[in-house]
Length: 140
Image 1 (cartoon, one colour):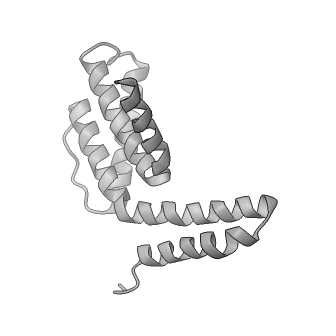
Image 2: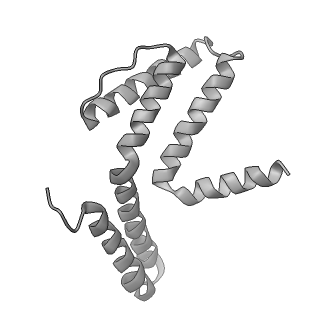
């Protein structure tokens, strides 16, 4: 393990360099591709920083929703496998119509919304910010 710079610091520096130095001199499709590279670096940094925490929360929420025992999760691979398995279980119950009516439906909507929001916090936080801003305006 390296002390400094951390992986997140390296990715942040790289994305800032791409945005500051390369995007302005690129044109057309190359500029678009350069922006994509900068965004990929940011996504990877957010994934490293918060991805496992969000996945653990997802597994906890799905276990409670599905009334399943919370699995013992030691590695990131364990967490990812548990998240996949529990999402498959939820999908199967939805397909069978087992959770179409309240209060189960409301609980599913709440859990799924949180999972999607956490995924957006990694993939593109601006989408989430825009959605939350629009939702707060519509409540006024």
